[in-house]
Image 1: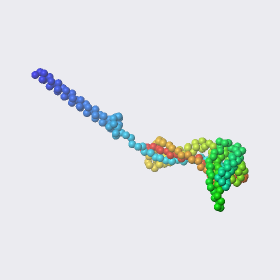
Image 2: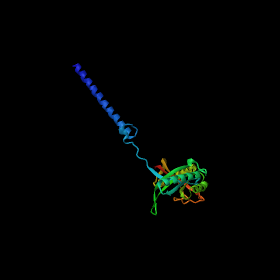
Image 3: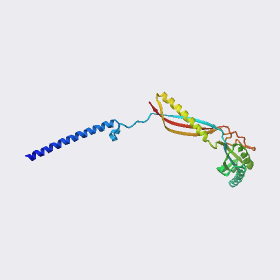
Image 4: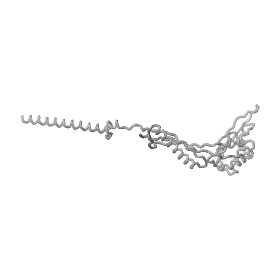
Length: 256
């Protein structure tokens, strides 16, 4: 009988211990849930309600421009000849192009500043007469605009009426200072525009989240396509002004 009573007592103790463990586990779970509601827990369930939403932002574009005087030029020069056969046309074009290059180099243009840009030969029918036309074109970089006229004159003298002058592009040898100034102007313009939008929205302007830029250079060209600057005496070239422009897109954070 005493053994039976001992067994029953032991079972009672185990049942009580089991109940206490269950109550403790329930309390721990409740604490974890409350911690999750406050965002302090690292469990998956707790984090589900604490993920931050997307930021409120405003995106604006600012433009900055700096003017500069171009100091070098890129001209397109070449020859175009017509002969009765393709072989004769090609041979004549080669001879004349060699003469043109020698004339250009005689003006101090280096080999590194001359690049072939076009070669062609095709059948050319005029007034019922079938012939062949061959052409050869190069880009010539001239580091001082004042020398453009003398280079063109030397090329024309070398090949006569078969010269082709296809245009000119004026350039800056170094636009570092212009880019720096244009970027500063673009940032200032973008900031003012963003602040205006924030005020209209009843918000405050926060920090910059991202910046991207587009750089462009523009300016007039005194010579168009078709050889408008040709002539036995070279070509007067006006450097004028060209623009270095930076467009910057900036994303700002909006705050309350």
